[in-house]
Image (cartoon, rainbow, N blue to C red):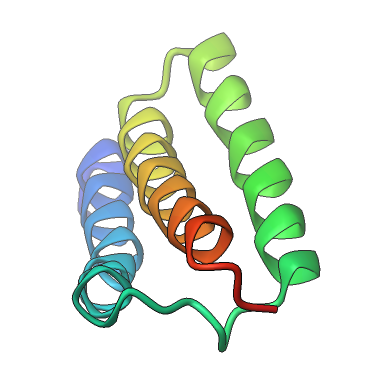
Length: 86
């Protein structure tokens, strides 16, 4: 049986890595027009709460995955705001 911490790290790596190509594309094209503000805000709040939860229970996979996801979302939000796309 696989250790639950290892399972969590694998899951965190896979789901978090999905943000990397999208963030790269947003930076490269200087456009986040395909992201709605509502989606970005809901995702940010949800991921932020998961991050806080991870800190409270001292769970490394939750902290790492959600910390990286928050950074990616912040980058996307900044690009969307700076380049003023709706």
